Amino acid sequence: QVQLVESGGGLVQAGESLRLSCAASGRSFSTYKLGWYRQAPGKQREVVATISNTGRTNYADSAKGRFTISRDNAKNTVYLQMNSLKPEDTAVYYCAVILTMSPNYWGQGTQVTVSS
Image 1 (cartoon, one colour):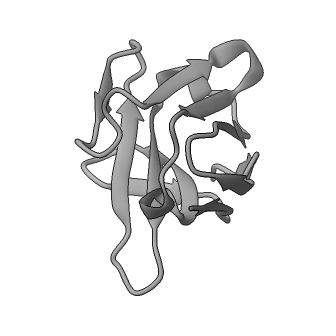
Image 2: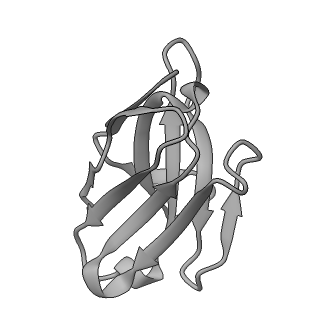
Image 3: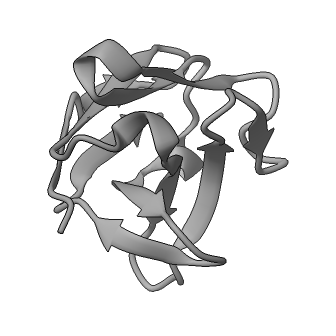
């Protein structure tokens, strides 16, 4: 069982930045593929970015050039740096551990609200 705790969400204005953090339990953190997902009101949850155990990253088109996913295995933490935020980035952001093709463990989510 893996427990994930997100932090760093909040209310910002368009164009500003936020950094989300997700701390994970467990001794195998360095072996996990990790991801950030988001869910806006009335919409399905969607992937924002993923990072493999080797550090390879992938981004949704909406995140490319603005968001950066990173990990610190010594701290069992994954980050999402979000720059140039837009109102359409407003959502609850979740981190996840991906052991198979789909996320297997989820955090509780952190709210990000971007005002125009």
